[in-house]
Amino acid sequence: MNTRFRHFGELYSYLEEQPPKEDFLHHRIADGWRTFSKAEFLFTIRYLTLAVYENGWRGKQIAIVVSPSPYWVMLDYALMLCGAVSVPLFTNISSKNLLFEFLDASIHTAFIESKEQENIIHRADKSIELIYLGEHKSGYRTFGELVEKGKEIDKENPQLFDELLYHIKANDLATIVYTSGTSGIPKGVELTHENLISQIHATSLNYQFDREKDVAFSFLPLAHIFERMVMHFYLSKELSIYFADDVKNVGILLKEVNPTVMTVVPRLLEKVFFKMKLKAMEGNLIKKALVSLAFYRATTKDPYVKASLLDKILDKLVYKKLRLALGRRMRMMISGGAALSDMLYRFYLNIGAPVYQGYGLTESSPVISANTPKDNKIGTCGKAFPGVEVKVNADGELLAKGVNVMRGYHHNEKATAEAIDADGWLHTSDLASVDDEGYITITGRKRELFKTSTGEFVFSAYIEQKLMSNGWFEHALLIGDGKPFVTALLFVEPDFLGRLATQMKNTPRKALESEKFKIMTDKFITKLNKELDHWEKIRQFRLIGDVLSIEEGEITPSMKLAKKQLMERYHNEIEEMYRGHL
View (cartoon, rainbow, N blue to C red):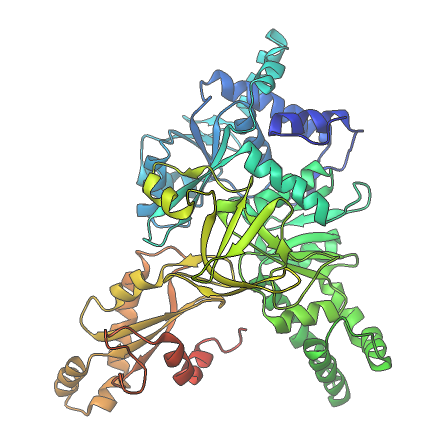
């Protein structure tokens, strides 16, 4: 039995050789769950592979623009098995970026599931052929029709599928995943079968699962390489997998599914924490006092120190009830996409809901390092993943090397050369330190790029320039690194403020604080937000009338913002914009 598969064709064959599994994939529908057996999953992939091969898609890029589901996974596998290149896309990005991605990847066909997606895609490019996932739409082919066509092909030529698998090579291009670059222009990360498969094998060494007992819950977008890679791993281990229909329903579904494992982003853990606390605080003064003690203890105690009598009492009276929010069986939450605060890390470990923080990039398929049940250190993103080498260069930047590192950026040799040096080291653009035990800690960003707590990158310099484009603001400071959304501090240009005050026949201070100026700024930012991807949109802002000083270290002699200093000075204003959020 080949457990050391090298590409997705060999993984498919491996799954065929394993015992049957009836409760394999579960798709949320209106009145419950639609369950796919492993056999149905594999046969559907087989038929889709044959159909898309007959379409002449071998070697071509095909877009998947549908919600996470078993159908998404089947499409992904079928495209890779027939020799096509799977290109997962989001529709909630700007039309400009969407059009760029279609053109850059030379996409001529996209799988979709709604009229809204059809409109978005055809606004970008009307020449794109659309194939609907669900029921028949006039003028369009459907997923079901392709499956039926594949069945016919399989009857006529039962050897063709095996021939297609035979021709797959480990270094074949499997997918192009688009990610925003520091220039603000999306970059297509080319990942091979070997890149992705190497992560499955590495994950197997760090985390142990039982195909009969473990249940995985998936709610993150499969267009994100993090969730997609983990999904490949779940499938390789033949876990029972449940797909959420909507992220808003996660709380309900967790109690219904009672999973043992799921991948998360810090933002979800933040929301769960707040909901737990709000609900637990309901009751009389005695209960509130007990809950306050429990939360204080859980967020401050070293989870690796032996539990005291107090901890055992709190577990029985409070923590046990808190764990129910995650279901009755959760034993592993793997967090990625952004840094998890130390406070939340301690909290979940102390209440008995193990969480393991990892780190990676799309360019590394994506995991570079991760904490594990064996090695878990709060404040770090773990040790280097099996098969991955890391080092910190003289500039303090984290570099990584391994079979997981991308082939390069699609149609962008210059960016590839900047990202991967002549010795094969991937430059992450993240500043880091590695302690004596090998744990990696990310200490900052090398470039003007930050990541929100939902795992999305924001190119701050570009948006800050846009904010200053109308002449109202002398400086703009975008905030959002590790935060749930983007906000801004807007430093008003003194001459403009003077003119506005004259028009209003009032003092500059009164003009700054006026409802009129706030409405003007609201309209300006609303217009700017239309040009931005949803995770870049500015949700809150504060107007600042202070003149920044070189002497006080607020700006440099070259008139660049001393951002750390300013965030400290305007800590209260920033906290106010994120009130109710971590």
